[in-house]
Length: 167
Image 1 (cartoon, one colour):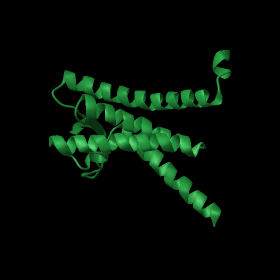
Image 2 (tube, one colour):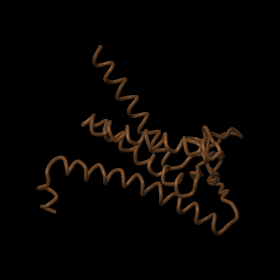
Image 3 (cartoon, helix red, strand yellow):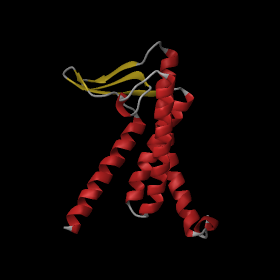
Image 4 (spheres, helix red, strand yellow):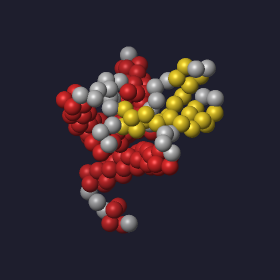
């Protein structure tokens, strides 16, 4: 343990960031594995939780919330490549910010890597969280999407607060 405390600040920061990204990734993977194990036991996943929350498995070949879904080989791989490039930009922004915003980018990156893993391994992302109210269903999403969305919302609020402070 004392060896970890004696590491250079850059290496220590890298390990902390890697740990946080891994936690988000693992939480996402575990949730998806649980849903996919239910799918192995049944022919489909359609679990009623309460009047506004269900688990209903759909396979998403697009980006967040099923947008830009495509079965065509070139479109799918172009989107996947674009996601990889965005992740590289996020990694750059994590190290450029060097403040609390880095943690919001870490949440986004961890979630994005979870979905990217699924795109590469399954060729689609399992989405299963279905919020609904009186017959209106929101987009079906997964745990990675939650982390991505929270990270983006936090970044927006951080920018609004910084903008207000500068005025």
